[in-house]
Image (tube, rainbow, N blue to C red):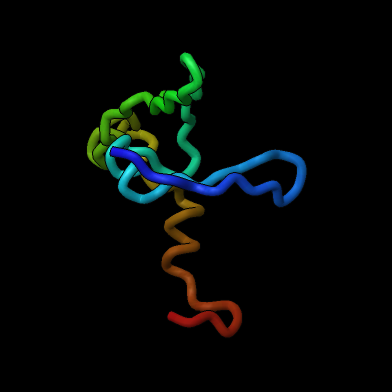
Length: 89
């Protein structure tokens, strides 16, 4: 695959855009890091993104003990109290 982009210099650094088909192919997203390598006049662009395991909500909740899920007397009173201002309920 080949494509052409234009190098721009809006402020201090020279920048170019990453065409959608390349970012889709490399599976990169905004904020991911890319590795640039120059080899015999060619630029090699590699995704240096580490693949993270998708975290499920239940896995996160399992890390908390049952004592952290209990409500204090103050919490109960607050939850059962009447609105104090013009809150939407």
